[in-house]
Image (cartoon, rainbow, N blue to C red; front, side, top):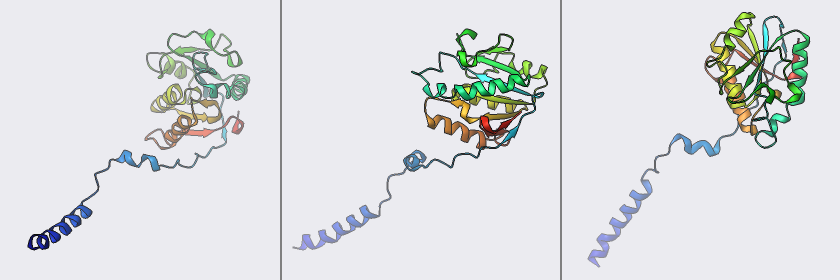
Length: 211
């Protein structure tokens, strides 16, 4: 009985200590499951100056813009075709990009080049080891319109690198695609929040653009 009387307080104390013990430390990634997507970024109407603006057509090629890899890219082709026609009608500079190992003949027929428009070829960064920057400088380009696929590859790098080279960028989001909506959304969010990039990028849609 004596032993039991002494053991009961000890057991109670142990229970209190267990109850009061801090929960295992959590990391910041443990909160990810509760994240809610931020509101969609606001799209703005823009007026394009054809003399100082270029249209960059990012990787509209069969290797990435297809039903198996990026069917969402195929869904953008009608708007891409419309934008391309408007740019050409205003005699704007149009520059095509290709993936490594591709050829200009891989471009989808809906948005095929004329044969007189410049082409650059690289990985995700089309400014890297190409003459894209010089092409734009030679035409005194101050603003680029960036469209294409993938959003988190060629598009994101083209936008970022153009800004870092002192240019303004217009991104019609209805002509920017990836393998899923999350990738497209986080890239759009990056454009309006990233240091230096934010403030130099205008998000819009093809129908909100005037030439």
